[in-house]
Every structure is written in structure tokens, then in C-alpha cells.
Length: 477
Image (tube, rainbow, N blue to C red; front, side, top):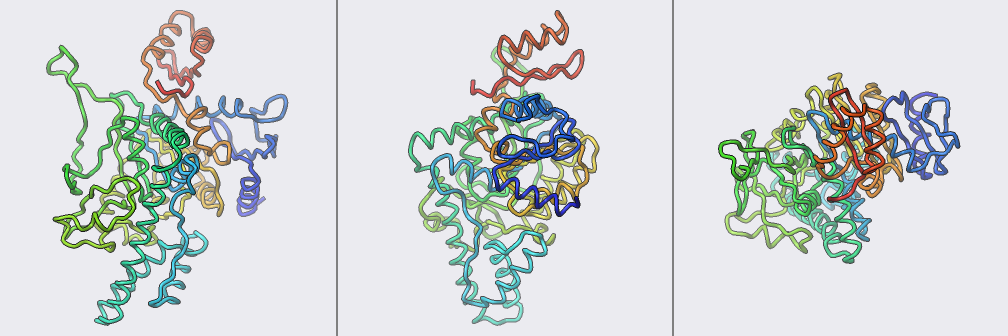
């Protein structure tokens, strides 16, 4: 079976409620039907006696493996629109911002045709509103160069209106979560908190978690705030933070009581980079400012009229379309953001986990591919679905199969299942870790495994005679 046939088979399987898994020593993608039946048993070395795969089997394969990977020297998380959709649906809302199309009156056919061609060239199917906005921006610059002022003025006015509506749709997706039924909203926030803490709960002596997102909304910021995670980015200031190009390795430390001159790293700190911009970023003359826009606000216009923004409008919002051309990511501030992304993941002993990212950005994909050329790196792809096959296309194109783990499907990509069953424990439990180490020294690895498992029900993965990695059940502590 050739590559295209495999991708089509996978899409059919996922659409019918099946799952695709590849972890640990799996050599190929393992297709599991909706009924738990493995499609090709000859490539599944861990198939249970009954022949069916359930959540318990999945957990035994996934959770210890992810726990080990999360102990990598460098850990990064890349979130796409899937995380907003997942939390939105949990809260009983209608999902995140849909990347549909809009209708221009000025140069309607030309913009539509160019947007379709751009999307097709990137392998993303039909064009969407991001493609249209990007093409319209290019066209506007061309009209100004040609000094066609009436046409440029008309297009600029329409483009301002469309971007304003696009920003409003982003705020509406936030509002759908913020104003949801209290019980559903609290459940959604609890899952989000547990999800983020599973990544951010790294001991202070390890490098900070790097969080990257292509989303324009502020869901990750809200989740981090609720979880007590301190986020660090390139913005400096309090009232209206300004984006800085300098890459100072700032961090957060604290002085333990009674100990002078020995500051320690504060736990629960992560670095955040929004690769495509954010709905609350505004270009203000030569600066990029982050305005005080509440999560789920009704309108953005009143906040653009704040003193010091010099009459900013929707065209000044830094909600940047997907990058189909390298030159688009060579402009300020995106060159700094993508440089941070490349510098963070393209290092030895680095693990990148993607969740809800459909591999629709060629520039990001190229950086990930470069990362995989380093033998000690690893990529974990987690997604609820792959409707147009972009994830699987990247998997087969990269050919670095041994460095990739794949979890796709309604069971494996469900954020609740991930937070409760598949991701490592969302707290730093030094007592449990120390207990396992003591038991290992006293009774040996096997006895330690059995004793710890029976006492606190964690999964313990022994890396060596002196190093033990522990992944207890996912509960907030």
C-alpha cells in the first residue's frame, strides 16, 4: 500500500471514530477501529490476549512513555486551534474561531482566486479567511505602490472592517467559554489546568517549559493564570507592555526562609510565544503593545481608543495570517518569535509535543523537520482528528519514524482523557519520587515497582540503577 492509500485509510478510520497510535517500540502506525480491534495485528507487539484495546491498555502504553519524554532536558508544547475547540466544547460553547471564508466586494474574484491558489500550494485544501486577508494586504500594498489612491482607500476600508469582524469572532469564542454554564465552565477550566500543569510541573533545576501557540485567543494565558503558572514572554511593562527584541534569559527565583545568598528557581514557570500574534497585540507606531483587553470582551474598538495608541484601528491588530511565504515571517516581530521557536526545539535532548495543531503552517513544519535531524530529539503528535491528512503527510514526509510518537483519534486526542489518564501527574511530588528511590535501593527495581504501584498507584519507569521516573495518576494536588 502506497503512502496516499495509507493516508486515505487513516482518514476513513478517524472519521469513523477509530484511533491511531505509535509509541515506544512501535515501528509503524497502529490503526485501531472504533470497536477496539487492531486492524493489522501483525505489527502490534503489545496486543492483549482478548484482542481488544481499551483505555487501560492505552494508558499502560502511553503514560509511562510520556512521563519519560517529559523528563527531557528541553520540553516544548505547541498548541493549535484544537485546544480552543476542545475546551470550548467542554464548556458547552460552539467551539473556537472557524477559519471559513469572507466576501470582499473590492477585487472579489482576484482575492478569492489567489487565496485558493495559495492554500492549494501549501496543501491545505481550500482557502480561508487568513489566506484572503493576506492576499488583500499584498494587494493593498501593490495599489499604494501604483498610486491608485481611490482603489487603495476603498480596499483599506473594507479590509479594516473584515479584520475587525475577525477579531470580534475571536472574542466571541473566548466569551463562549467565559460565560458558559458554571458547572460546565468549571469542568472545562479544571481539565485545562490539569493539562497545562502536566507540562509545566517540572522541577526548578530543569529548563523551563516552552509553550508555543498559533492561536490568536488568550485561552492558554487564562489557563496558566488559573493554574498559578507564571508565564514569561518578550513583553516588558505593566500598564501597556511593549514587545522587546532582546533575548535576555530572565527567570524567576526566590530566597528560601533562613537561607541567604542561595536563591532557588521558582517552580511552575513557563515561557510563552504566540507565533502568529494575538488579538490583544497592537502596532503602535514603531512598537508592538499589548493592550488590557479582557478575556471574552464584547468589542475591541473601545480599547483601541485608549490614550497613547494614536488612533489605532483593526488594521493595527497583530493577528497574523498563516505563513505561506518565508518573507512573511521575516518581518517584525515575527522573525523574533520564529527564531525563539527554532532556538528552543532544535537542540539535543529536546522533546516537542503538539496538541491540536494540524500542520498547516509550512514555516513551522520546516522548523520541526529540522529539529528531527538531531538524533536525540523527539516529536509527540496528539490530535483529535486529521481531516485533510496534513499530520500523516508530515509523518511520512519526515521519515524520522523512530523519533515520532503519534496519538490521533477521539479517544487518544480527547483532552479529558489526556488530562485524566494519559499525561504525567500534574504535580511535583518529591515524596513519592524519594520513596521509589529508597525502595529501589533496598529491594531492587522489581520490588520497588510493585510496592510503589500498590501503595500509591503510580507508574514507575526505571531508567537506570540510580535514576527513577515516576508518573502517578493525574490528579491535582
